[in-house]
Image 1: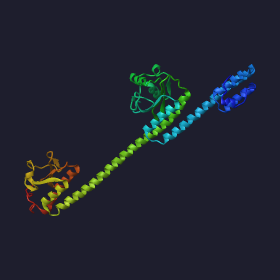
Image 2: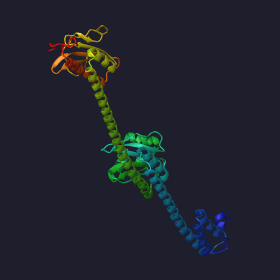
Image 3: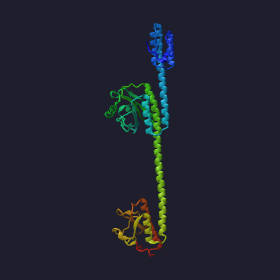
Length: 399
């Protein structure tokens, strides 16, 4: 005797005819009972010895019930898919990071289509080459960072046609241009079936979305349409995120330039203050020796001042290595050797001598300018006091 399930037993005895059996099938459908319960109605009718007409009615009701059951099941799956797409849209809308977006898309692709793996490749050049930016379910072959040529594989067909492409057996597929290296990577993953769709947005194609299975699988148009909806959502989100990344990069660059400009302004203000201090010190009447000592403090350096004849005017020459004979030099400070800097002292077109500095640390560009200011200050001090006012060495013959 046939086994009676709880769902079938709920709907009464088997003492009624074919019309009652058909009605019971409708009741089971209304109760969302499994297909096995619909088959059990027919089995129970056979067990009780139903007539041929009754069995015919129940058979027809069963076939229609299976059709309705399939339609309801497809509707439930469609509703579940739409709910998953809605959740995905919310998730994508809340993220502005490209890598995070494509990772979400790869995982959602596996869930929606129940495939073994999924990966997203984004275009990197105008020629159509792409690089895998996210994968889900892969092992090591199709890894993140793998470059894909624009001329080979399923992705090349998708980018060329702008339409979905799927194959139930990749290695036997003759509609694509196979690349030995790519085929080897796909072979190591054990991939047989592939469904690929373009990530296309109003501004153009940004990449390709791949769903792959390790068994032969014939993808259905409904599956391609479902993944196409996900691809559209992904393309819009990736396009937005890429523009945002570009915008943020430009903002960061502007902020960096602004910071450098502010730093330059502050440096210029500080150097201006240093120059005013040095010039003020030169006009204070403390002589070349006092000015040289002050410059030594500012530059953390040993300072010598020599006139155009080579006579020492300030500093201790005994601690210095032999110095070259003095000769006119440019107004910009010059590096004589690894340790010694030289700044010329000019009064208009008249060369008066040099200031020599041996910094205890590396002389910065700001330090070079301070040394140049020191040369100007010495010339100013000489001019303000006159060549015979006790400055020594700077005389009327400094031609």
